[in-house]
Amino acid sequence: MAVAVRGARGGGSGGINGGLRTFFSHRIFISATFTLLFLATLSALFSSHPHHHPSLTSSGNAYVQRTFLAIKSDPLKTRLDLIYKQANDHMTLVNTYAAYARKLKLDISRQLRMFDELAKNLTDLPLKPSYKSSLFELGSDVDEDVLRQFEKEVKEKVKVARLMIAEAKESYDTQIKIQKLKDTIFAVNELLIKAKKNGAFASLISAKSVPKSLHCLAMRLVGERVANPEKYKEEGYKAEFEDPSLYHYAIFSDNVIAVSVVIRSVVKNAEEPWKHVFHVVTDKMNVAAMKVWFRMRPVEGGVSVEINAVEDYSFLNSSYVPVLKQLESANMQKFYFENQAENATKDGSNMKFRNPKYLSMLNHLRFYLPEMYPKLHKILFLDDDVVVQKDLTGLWKVDLDGKVNGAVETCFGSFHRYAQYLNFSHPLIKERFNPKACAWAFGMNIFDLDAWRREKCTEHYHYWQNLNEDRALWKLGSLPPGLITFYSTTKSLDKSWHVLGLGYNPSISMDEISNAAVIHYNGNMKPWLDIAMNQYKNLWTKYVDNDMEFVQMCNFGL
Image (cartoon, rainbow, N blue to C red; front, top):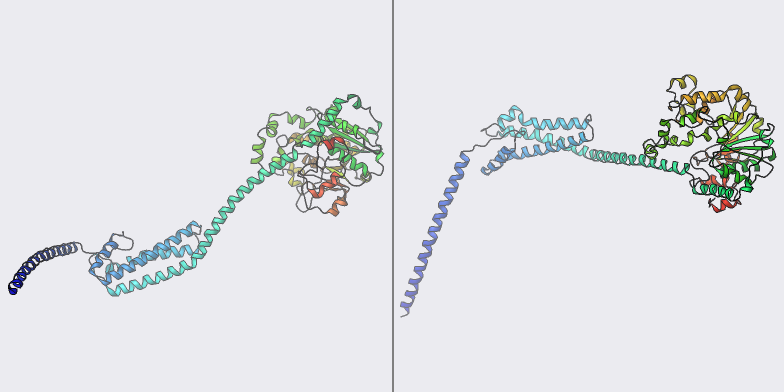
């Protein structure tokens, strides 16, 4: 019974195993059939596309084909492919550094020539007949000896390329940084130039505009006259105004407090103040304020002060005075009064000359002193931005050797020569004047009016001012025509009489300032402005009449 059972189980197991063997036999047969078909296809494909090696300058298709054919495991072809890739990579790197050299404008440099030559050698290497026929001809087998020689040359050139790149890399990186830095500096410099122009224009506005305190003072003084007309009736004429035995001063200004400081400083340092006479000329707008000031605050010591307006001198009209005639021209008005801000930022070097002040009658009155004061023999001209620190009567005793103008010269080295003020490219200027002649300063000048009349200096001034209507001889201002008018009639004074630069130069020696008879705040930083230099400001403010009620009310901040 037991045997029958085992026999039955064994028979069942044999049926199952027979079925599995039949199933797997079919699978193996099918797999073998597809494998043979795939290999046959590959063989047909390979046999119908023989391989070839183009030169380094051909397209990349050949290189891809050789790489694909490396499945046939030809070691020489694989080795050739690696050498090709190495040479091509280094050629690309060499060309990249050559491009950097051109970008840095090193076209004539040794490095650029070497890189170009090396790149050309790498390109031409596979084109050599021996290599081309043995390595890169279609259907040819790779010659191992030729391949070895080709590999040697490639490695030599690769070595040279690596050495050159290592040597140049740091230098080129530095050159690129330098170029970027130069570009940055250029851009910053452009911004700096623009900022300087804007700053100079802002400084010009600050210097030439009327400060609120000065405007306030003038308005308070005029208001005082309107409120109390009986107190400010016109005074009669004084004989002292024409007495040639006295010391006469001419001050032309529209700045009330500045004129007050000049007169107070003269008087406080004068040994005999009663012998000093001041002739103040202002414009019609400020003449009332000027008169009220000196009536409210009369100068001590018996000093005489004459105050007039430009309009009081009837001979000063456009038919006689060139600058008044020129101001009536449309071109001159356009130059001064149209698009001032735009012109200033475009022409930073000359924008200060566009200030109408330089062609104003107050600025040119100095050329009419003999006609304004016909009975005087000598007169001392003072700008309104000076401070007197010593007695000035010694100037009337200076022997001018028959010359008209006594002034302090300002030249040193090549600076402040006539060439800096006049246009020596103009034939008239070049013919008549020496470009190296030493310039002198307006602001404190002792004039011999008799010599002036004899030399006909005002006529000379008119002649040259008429010629300069188009500003071809000099830019503008009163100093250039003064240098021309008194070219051969100026006597040089000792420099201690007149020290200049307190309105722009922070480096003037305090010893030089203390020894000076007159200090001059020429420049934009006037002592009555907020932009004044602090180290010099107190030399001016100590002569301000701070007890005057309107000075306190107008908040001068002195």
